[in-house]
Image: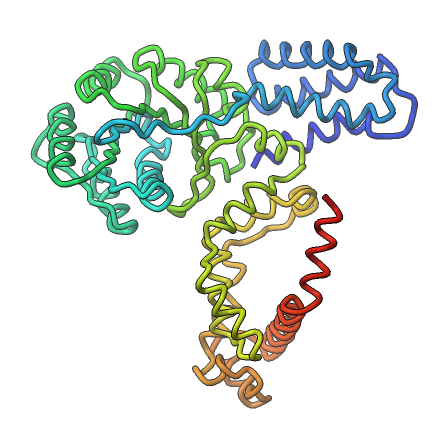
Length: 442
């Protein structure tokens, strides 16, 4: 996410990270490169110019030329400006109303239907809402079919009227259905078009007036750059929407939409989509995104994702097994499944400070665990429970069954044994020592 912009900003700030003499000239040169990096990221020229002008005023106003660490101060100033540019504060979703009605808008191909499913899953799992998805794309039968498939996948009911070609009436009927059947959140997926047109805007405006949603979200494909910002403005002029959703941020995006959409429409980015999975949805935090753009990682979001997958009861069971030397491959497999639920691997690595930059050219596949899972699934239940029973002949059979080599099986066995020892140590004095070290680092 934003790899190209991150690289260019890092190079722009590099001159002030050295130990040489800092002058007003090389500060100006740095800001020139920062502006160029923003323009390359498809940021509007005026916004890029205003951004660097504010940076210059703040830098000179804080005596960046005479500070002990001018490079660090400049990085902080850039981070603060990026945070402000993207909205400054985190803005949550309005869940008022009975039921809460959320209207989704956007062009065809922006990922609107998929994101409707992600939002439904988010409200169901994180906000304990009983969600109803509503299919109001009466022009594209595939859209309603797609919504039904998504609904089945996440266990959410989908309301649709295939014979009815009036999306306003469908929306009204869906809300009546929600009230009568105990749904406290309704997400209306409206029709998209290939371009903004009068018919489309009139239709969604009529739905908006009729259902009076608590939230109207505009879904935009972040890979379309400045075009996305222009489309957002056209929609906002008609709908006066409440917030923006940026999809496909896991793709090769330049980042211009994320950086400038708040300035142009004066509406907050509320959510981002970072993958195909239904769990790949994040609340947008401008300060955390600024950290990631500058290669500082996002430890807070990483910890939050880990906590979401943390099961206290399962953790207690694992601890007992470790204490009794009963930790087996089934338990190991369960840990892998929890990690996979946290999101795509490249996104997770990008949240670790410094790791995103170090691993930028490494292709981290979401199927990184596929070989390990195949090896474990090729073991007998007894072998998974008692790994010590796996001898040379069993390794050959496991390798053949999993389509891997004996060397790969040996490597997994070695890693498993090392992890088991480390977990055993964490149960004893080693864990207490590590916790004490972490406290001392604060």
